[in-house]
Amino acid sequence: MFDTHMHTSPFSTDAGMKLPELLKRKQETGLGIVLTEHMDYDFPPPLVYEFCTDDYFKTYSPYQNETFLLGIEIGLQGAVCKKNSALIRFCPFDMVIGSIHAVCGKDLYEKTYFEDFPDKKSAYSAYLETMYRCIREFDDFDTLGHMDYICRKAPYEDPLLHYDEFREEIDRILKLLAVKEKSLEINTRLFGQKEAVRELAVICRRFVELGGRTVTIGSDAHHTAAIGSSLKPAYDLAFQCGAEPVVYKKRRPCPAV
Image 1 (cartoon, rainbow, N blue to C red):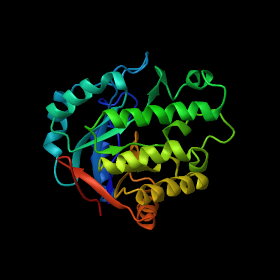
Image 2: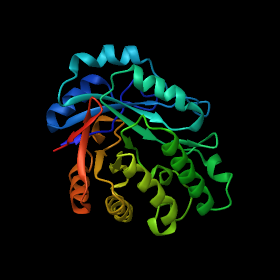
Image 3: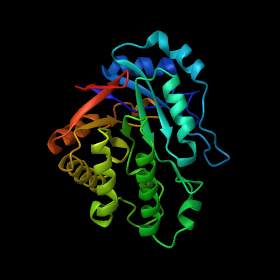
Image 4: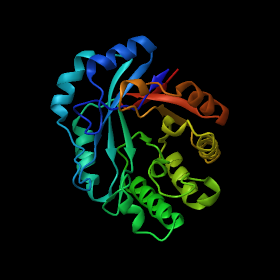
């Protein structure tokens, strides 16, 4: 199996995983891996999520093979579409994850984002609207990363992204992904919560109903111990929903198992 989402130091600002321990963990687990370092242009200060792609390929290309792939996770924001496209077309990435980490100039990991909205409904709707607009306007990515990202630091009693609460917003995103033949990521970060897994299954199943075909599955590991976390249950979920797990190699989808 492939774990298609992970971050290493020094290329991802928030990662603590170094190459030697990554290689050791890969050998121990027998997993295929895709490195997907953060490139989030114009991210709200003070954090900076950018890296030198020349250094990235120079460091990791000697290890690149059929089970050690080099990708990137780009931040989707309307104002940086041209910069993202130029980067993707210039660099030989195997796989590109497109993710929403910031909305309205605010980091979704900070409480200040949620303070701008009166309730969960409006905060999540703004997030999903931004996601839809970015996918509509931008094509240079392969899979939509962690649709439920906003849940991670949301200050609500029930922070989960429930399909029934946001049916229209989620449906139009899933339809657009299907029409553009993009994949949907099943991110295992919240797999420790049974209700979160149920909601992900509803969304994945709906994606297939609306014409979506492929999913990528990743742990979003920032530390070695998280590599491969809940991967088997995530693959089982994908198959139960009728989706095909894939990994991208040279930007082309291939079976991930």
